[in-house]
Length: 70
Image 1: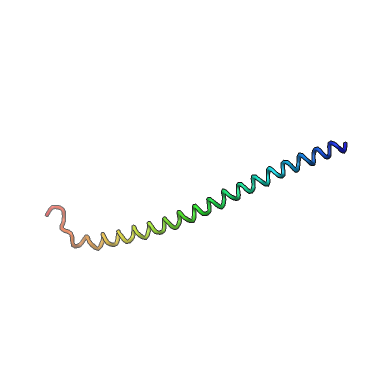
Image 2: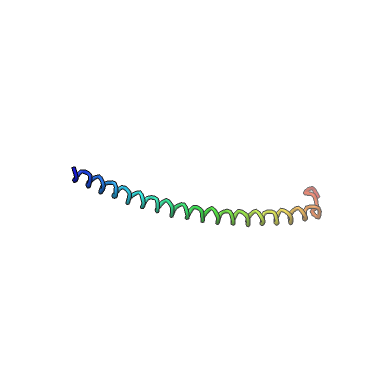
């Protein structure tokens, strides 16, 4: 009986070690995804600002343009 208990403890410790490793891997992926999301947010903000700048420039230029039929 003592051997069975010891084997179960060893089995549980082994499973726990695998679970700890898996959690660490998930945490690393989560950190990587968070960094990627933050980078994409920054890029999106910059592109949005540039788009507004270009839009403002083009809108300001329209009254000075001749219509296409001239």
